[in-house]
Length: 298
Image (cartoon, rainbow, N blue to C red; front, side):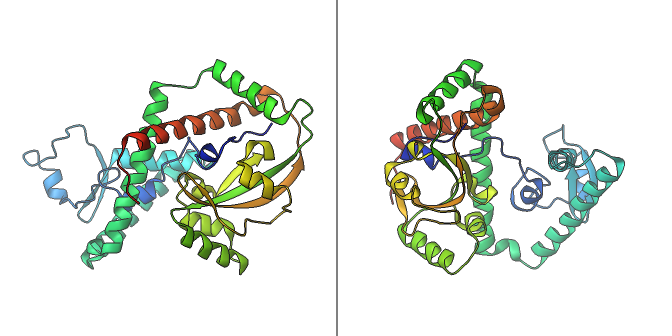
């Protein structure tokens, strides 16, 4: 069962809803989510008279002028467990040691004035923005969870797109979405010279799929924007668009990672993918609503 979006706006909204917060990035770049981005003297933190107003803060270690919060430690531990590691005393010690090491490196960077560099401030702002996006999406689906009925309806809709025979060729595709055409053309020239599509997607794409190297998943031509569908049917494995395609949120470069004969799978076998597909559609609607009420200047 192919689970992808069937119009140009939704196609580029292939957002992986269940994003795992990489605490180690947050610890270095984001204020208040790991240890404080503004260094606090340990003596001050441990002094009841000058303690932070958030009385519920607990600390598991200190490293130089940084105090590592219990929340930071647990967030990092959850990330390790989500990556398949077993919860053992050794893992817990290793996680704490890693946080201590990073705290010390961060302090060394600050001592050299790196935190005042414009490039660092730009990255800090981008990291904060990314986490705010994630928090907004997670809160939306906490309030409006996808129902079983919606999943069933989406399954039937996808079946109709494929056709009951389900014999059409399907394509596993990856994408890079950038803000302007000139950047897209430059990236295509780098791809033609042999650079890694996944590597460029991770570095330059503005779509959430960048964390997976731009991987979107399996689609059939009938589920793609017509401009792309007309091209992709002639692509072989490893081929990519030679000219960028303009879509609502930017300029799109698509690569065919693999091809297969299509077939319709059972509902239970694709339920997780269906949930992702619906999530992506709802996120697309959120973005469309926000853009309709915002003043956007390009």
